Length: 193
Image (cartoon, rainbow, N blue to C red; front, side, top):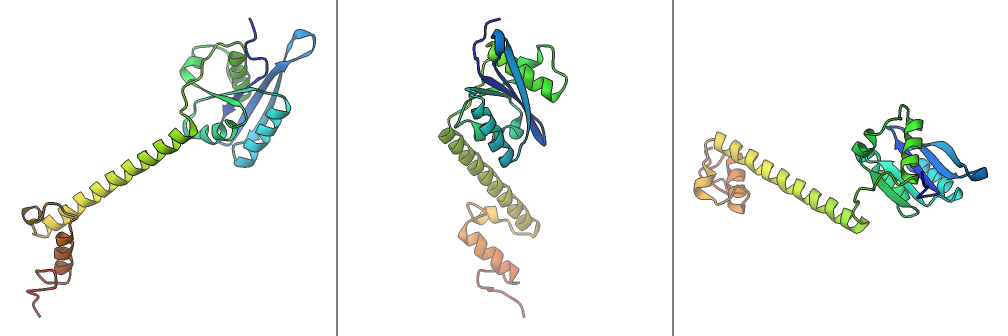
C-alpha cells in the first residue's frame, strides 16, 4: 500500500495515560514504529508534544473519546496537524486488542490514508460555542428556579400569576419579602402583633 503520510502518529487515549505510536521511514525502505506512553496530565501532553516534534511528526491522529481527548487535542493542535477520528470508522477494521496495538493501528490507518478526519471547528468557534452552551444552561437553571419559586408561593396560598406577569418581578419579590416577615404587603402591612 502507498504511504500517504510518511511521518505520522496515532494516539490511543485512556483514562490515566495515552499510548502514542509514531510511524516514520526506517532503514532499507521499511517503515519503523516507535511507541511511547505518556500521562494525560498537562506535563505528559507537553512531553508527548516534544517527543513528536523530535521525531519530525507532521500529522497526529486520535480516536474521538469525548472529554478524555480534548486536553490532548488542544495541547497538540497548535504544533501539528491534528485529526480526530470517528470510532466507528476504525471499529469495522480488524486488528486491535490492546492500547498499544490500538495506537499502532491508528497510525497505520493514517499513514496509508484509510481514514478521514472529523470536522473540528477552529478554536474561536469552539470558545464561542462553549459560551453559548453555558449561557443556555444558566438560562435553563434560572427558569427551573422560577418554576420552583412559583410552586412554593402557590403552595403557601398566594396566586402570584393573578397579580403579576412573572414570578421574578420586583413586586413579587416585595410580596414574598413581606410574607416572609409575617405581613401581607411589601412593608409588612397587615402584620399582626
